[in-house]
Length: 477
Image (cartoon, rainbow, N blue to C red; front, side, top):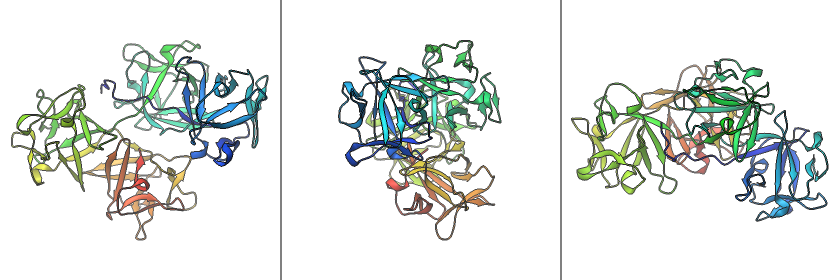
């Protein structure tokens, strides 16, 4: 689906792991740093910024919005509110994918362990090497910098899951296969599906076990390792946010489509690209916009008709979504509800919601689900059938559509359900309905069949007890 510039490159955020397998950590007290973190949580996440004038130098910003720096004696600090000359580092990538960080100003290398960190080494040793663990949500779209388009081998929806294991990354498709360096999709991970991550000018590159880089090959852009062992534009990629893509079905059982010109009508019997819409949630208003596969938006026109004639975001392209269990209602900018007329044409002319104003909305580009909340990822508890919501690692779950609701299945083949005391359990023999509500840009709420929202409690256990949508019940997906 064309992006027309609407998808944005994700900020590169990551954890840095030293030779003792500990994460670089920024403490609030006196803005001190150490390498003592056992896992990647808020204090262990760093944001990469680049000098706009000089693309080689980078700055490392902590979660406290302060910058890592080194003085001429190698003393490390992290209290600068704005980056200065002491905060300028150069990334020196190693063959195994790890980074060495060199002070651009003093030409010394950063390293150490625990509370004993310095930037005074004249050469790169084991203590000066850092593994890079990306902190962004692992599901994104992969965009070729050279070709400016998404990669077909990674699924029709171009969604890829980055799987991090022992300092390397695998690229996993929506149907749970791994990309091999020869361009094939395989069921099992191996050495040929593991890539080291390299960074250049804010772009990512993936180097395989033979030292060759992934790049799009041929007219279809098949993604595979090329012959080149040197990094160029063809081998560079952006990771971009992947908006949800949905199809709508009206009460007449027909799919909403743009197949017959600019009119948005519920008149098709099958799902194709013409019936697929990219749903974007505006960050400020939290209203929804629907973009066609041709790049235009749904918009309200004369007499309440909905057409696909808008090329820019306007007031008339924004819709409120009302979540009504297994169906949704859409309210246009004129305050009227969208209904499907007898001929299928969508028009915002209704004051109340009846059958003609209710639509089945199916998410089509998230067959696998990874959830990240305010305290971490959702992951199976090690010693019980419950789920944790505060982990630095994630588990991958299957998302199965069921008439406006969803079933969530673990890798074991068992289903999620909510117990009588509100615990979300993952060992159900029978499936249970959950409802996805896309309420904010990049985040959703999940309501159980008990009418309560999923959230993590103070101990980190996933519970189905929330009575409203708030920060504790919002999930990156």
